[in-house]
Image 1 (cartoon, rainbow over the protein chains, first blue to last red):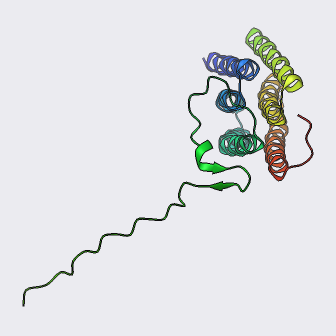
Image 2: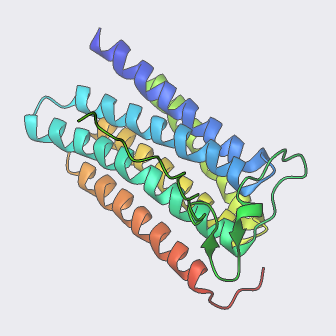
Image 3: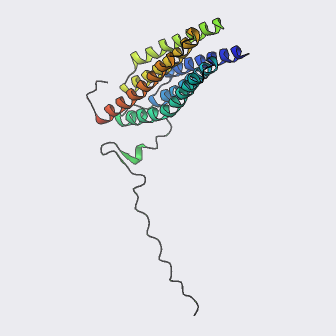
Length: 134
Length: 89
């Protein structure tokens, strides 16, 4: 029984990794490639580490396997964010079919200044002083 | 079980080959960094499967170090890109 679960986990993990590599090969753009790799590869590695945790009966090994899963799940978004930011700053080209780039009108690539959040807030209309009844 | 493991090893080897094509062709440096990260993720899976096959739990330490190195490399490459080193892409 546990062999079947292990086999299923290993096989699905390998298939997810193959999907991730297909995505990184076929997709047209840095950001879409990252969208393929971060999620699918993280899920694949986590599934295989889950199979490892099922295979070994020692507590220390199971804890280490779960630690690997936790580490991958914590670091993958951080690394993806950092690489995506660097790629945008370097000016890697977006795909021709990109519909919307919300960062472009709000961002100065020379000074690295983002306009959103810098607006001067409208002065509030003076509210008439509340007069209390004597 | 052995056929499943053999099949998954073949699939992951194929994934490594496809990723290597992107690493070789990648038009810019960030693409190559993404391919390297995928490389390390696939290697973590590989090491896990080998640990299951050979019944050696110490191989998990190798997987941990692999994941750690990939994260550090990604951060370092990103810092390098943002600070504007010499590039030829």
